[in-house]
Length: 256
Ligand SMILES: Nc1ncnc2c1ncn2[C@@H]1O[C@H](COP(=O)(O)OP(=O)(O)OP(=O)(O)O)[C@@H](O)[C@H]1O
Image (cartoon, rainbow, N blue to C red; front, side):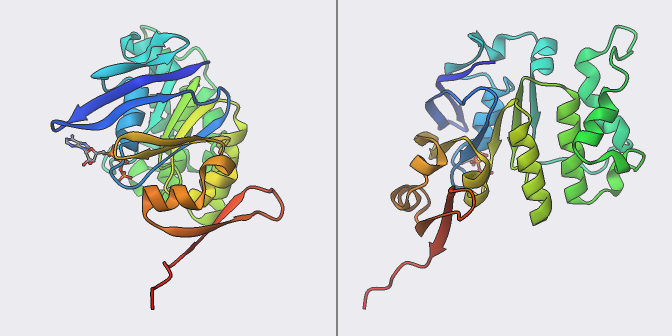
């Protein structure tokens, strides 16, 4: 599956919050979408998911504009895990994950793949939660179940908005390793630059709606880029085991 962002942009509240992004996240790999608060990450994910029509440019999946795909076929191909999830739905976890199967259901509401929900729950390490009421879950458990719902959709393109939110360090590492090894084209908005450096094959850095940099974390996450985009000072070290960049933030040196 080839994903191309071709000069895509949109205004919200009269302002260009995503403005002319050109990018080609590598097929079958995990791409990190980085950038400060308000840079446009969530808006760009919604554009890529086809939920927001672009005011300029297009997002192409195998050369077809995603926002022009029929809704059902788009829902089979693209899964978006959004940041906020409501806490009040009176559903069990199994029922929440079953929502991911709606695009596959027949006219009579039957699922051609009866085991897809259970497989997705097990893959996301949420099988033990299947019978729990959704409203009773912790933030981290909910995040896992949302991942399971997205996996149940069996998408070619997986879009995750801050998927490590609410997760403890062990759960963060296992989730990103899992997503990286899925072999599905995935774009994940991430705030933790060290996690992005450790797990992403490619990163896109947004600043004020524009693409500030794109490439392998080793090429992109430089002290200059971090200063320019985030206004922070850092040294870049090398991970002793993986060779990946490790960002050591520090306070700016004060002038005497
Ligand atoms: N419905 C809206 N109307 C007007 N402005 C909006 C709307 N939604 C988002 N914005 C603005 O668009 C800009 C980009 O928002 P977006 O949520 O895409 O950023 P983000 O990079 O995901 O931020 P964060 O890291 O804080 O989640 C922000 O300035 C935000 O205030």
